[in-house]
Length: 94
Image (cartoon, rainbow, N blue to C red; front, side):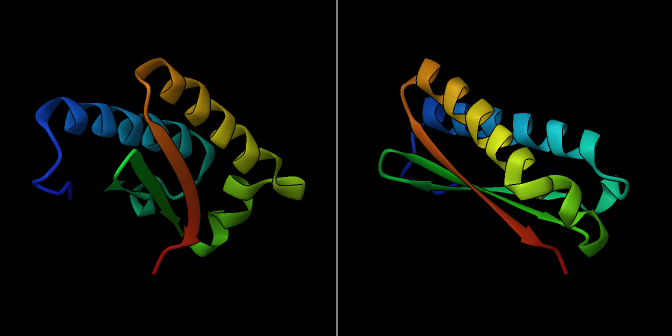
């Protein structure tokens, strides 16, 4: 959940990025219901944390990390447009 010290405009921008990453990751995995994408705001932007099922982890990371790198590239390009910085973390869900 987003912190209360973040303005409504910033919350909207962070939620848009969270939603974008969720849509892309759900298209990549088999267990769409196990995808959890959270946004953790910080001073200049937010960290997007993606948790997927163990069997889908390789699909999100990709060979030699190429898929995860591509997700970071998309996130970086979209974040430049709104002037905020975002980081991406992929984790194994529970």
